[in-house]
Structures are given as structure tokens and as C-alpha cells.
Image (cartoon, rainbow over all chains, first blue to last red; front, side, top):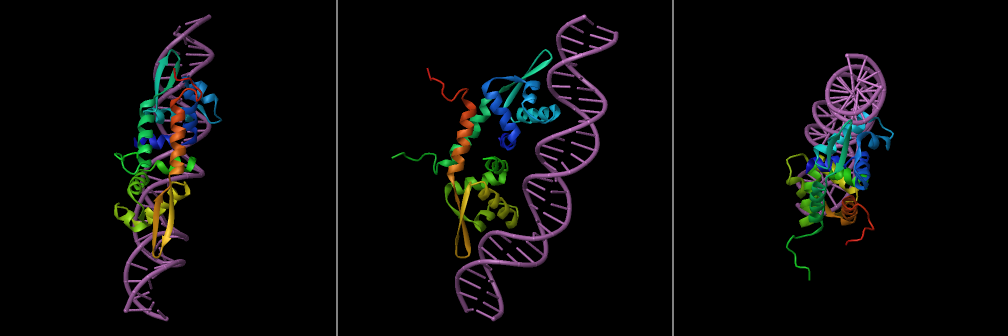
Length: 92
Length: 92
DNA sequence: TCCTTATTTAGATATTTGTCTAAATGTATA
DNA sequence: TATACATTTAGACAAATATCTAAATAAGGA
């Protein structure tokens, strides 16, 4: 999960995840949303993939990137755990 | 919230948050849980403070660090938002 | 005031990170 | 096959980060 937290630390990568929340997109279309170069976006996409936050699938010339939510759920679990003093706390 | 995401990217800082989840602690006691030097821990604590993830309060010689959950909740909100295609989606 | 303890600040350094351009790879199509 | 398009890989470089030691600040007690 360390890689996921590191991936989430960059604003560009978080913005990519928000784009993919709406719909899967190929690399070029993702890059068009940003001012930075395509190779830089490709690098960010690779980090997101390594972190398990996105998946890629080649469709002919294009490579389609899709949000992968399992690790997102893990991160949410970690965050929730921080909120509760004890896991087994009684709620009243 | 960018500072919070950046703060969460470091394993030592996440471990500090988990320590503080149990109970508030002063800087020295926190540092004793790690192999790295006190000044390094002090630096991590400062980043967590800048990010709004912890608060500090001087008690005589000691400085007590306490988890501050508001920003944690904001991060959870952001993460949840990523999970749902639309915020206003009907649930059946 | 002087000494001890707790903590932070300052400054240095090695590593990591984000970005770029240029080149390579993979795919489609004439 | 030749060409164009989509994307990644390679390599370089500046900026950010994590760490350290040494010094400074803050508070308590003799």
C-alpha cells in the first residue's frame, strides 16, 4: 500500500484518477487534459499502475486506462482505522 | 489537502499517525519508537502539523502531539468520491 | 544562576521525484 | 513495405525530500 500512498501524493496523478472515475480513457486523451508532455503522463500512468490504482489494456494502437478500485478501498480502510481509537469499540 | 496527501506518502509519518491513534504522545516518546534521529522525527511531526493531521501543545518541557481528524475525514471523502461514478447516483 | 532534559532549527548531503527531449516500440493502413 | 499515429523507454537535469550532526531554544530544578 506504500506505493499507492506515494502515487496519491502527486496532484497530477490524483487528477488522472478523477478523470478515470468518470470513464476509462486512453493515454493520449488523458495527456490532452494536462499541460505536461505525453512522456511525463505516461510515467505517471505507470506509477499508478505499479500502485494498483489503474489497469491498462491495449486496444489496437490505443492503450485504455481504467480505474482499479481494490487498492482505493484498502487506502480508505487504512484511513478509517486511523479515525477509530479501537477497532472493536462499542458504539453506545 | 495536497499537503495531507504528501504527508501520508511517507511510511514513518503514517506510523506516527497510527501511534497517535491510540493516544496522544510527546515528541520524545514518539521518537523512541523509531530508529531514526530525533531531529528527523521532529521534521516529520512538523510536516504532519503543516498538513493539519496532528496538533501540538506544549506541556512544560514536553510537547504533546495529538491526532487531528478533520483532514483525515477530508481525505476519506476524496477517496470515496473516486469510488463512485456519480455523486448523485441512485442506489437501485 | 547553572545544569540537565526536551525539543526544534540550521545546514549539509545523498536519494528520490517530476519533468523534458529524443529515440524506440507497437499497431494500422495505403 | 513504407508511412503515420499512439505510446513508452532512455537518459539528462533541476527540484524536492529524508536523513544526519551540531547548535540553538525552552523549561525545570538545584
